[in-house]
Image (cartoon, rainbow, N blue to C red; front, side, top):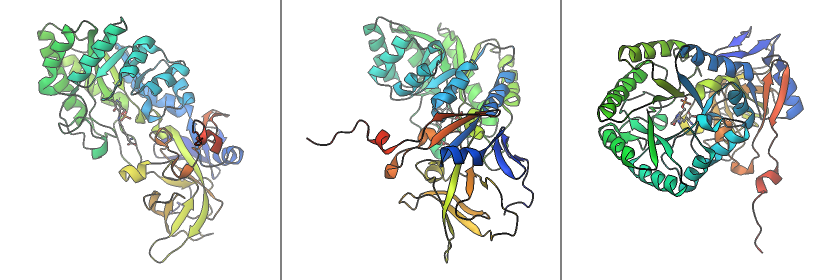
Length: 432
Ligand code: LLP
């Protein structure tokens, strides 16, 4: 049900708020942006991104730390530029992501390259760019990276991603640090992998890393993983192999529907206390947050096309779909959906709607059983849409990908124009 007086600030959305009954991103009205650029439209708040980053920066104040934005969360060039200008490094997982960081002005030396399936050509591209570190995920990858580095007459700086076998208690598709996951080198095999890496002439061991999953809202799995990783650092160093940096993987979860993850600085106060206690507090520390830096900085504005009341379900059909917002279809994820300009309570009926898109799949839903007072032509904002939405968007049903706007105070910049049919067909050939 729409609250009679809409709250000034929405949960988890400090810079996305109602002003006089209209939803704004910082000082820009979302309705004005929708009129100018059309819908569906992603809108991001730069202040929100920088505020999220500042919480990590406060957490690491006085330490030798590097924050590498996990750009898979949102790899649009304008977003990357914000983090590059703020001094971030980047966690990449493909040659395409590497090209994007470089195009956005990111510093190659602060790039770390994760992923279980790096190809030889991606390795070569990253070596030529001079990236900071390869996060190697298997013994087989060590051998291939060594070959590629020797052939390129370069040395690859490596960290081994260890799988700490810790349950992050999140959705199974985004848990990555359990024994049954494809990621990382098993804890028991890690020392052997380090010995091998240290013996390969094309590699230089520089670090250790782990990543246990995403949308984690509790400190315990981080603490457990940290203890396991530190045990390994001790074992590896006892074998005479120095570890310069320790990388703890992705960042915190965010508030989609009342989740209350600890603030980044509070989490790191706890983790640093443990690191200090074990004598590792002065090591170079790295993290790879994605979702928590951009998730609640973004919304997707969509227009209500049709209302379709039915016997069992009422459908509110909007112009954004699973190709724009894939998380509900993929993970049954929840995104809050609010009107851009709420109608006065009681002026239209507000039954419970299933908010769905135009894609020809029953899995194309964005929100289920939402009490909304809406009419065709109204604008809705799908909240917490800054992470893993545009970066996972597709052209399914030959739908062009949405436009994106980045707001900074009263200024709105179009950082990606709406994809046209011609854009979509570029690169295809008709048969002779
Ligand atoms: N580092 C590595 C090696 C990762 O695999 C990931 C995310 C991150 C960092 C960033 O984690 P974050 O700070 O965002 O939690 N598409 C899913 C999320 C997949 C996350 C995969 N790895 C979703 O929409 O929920």
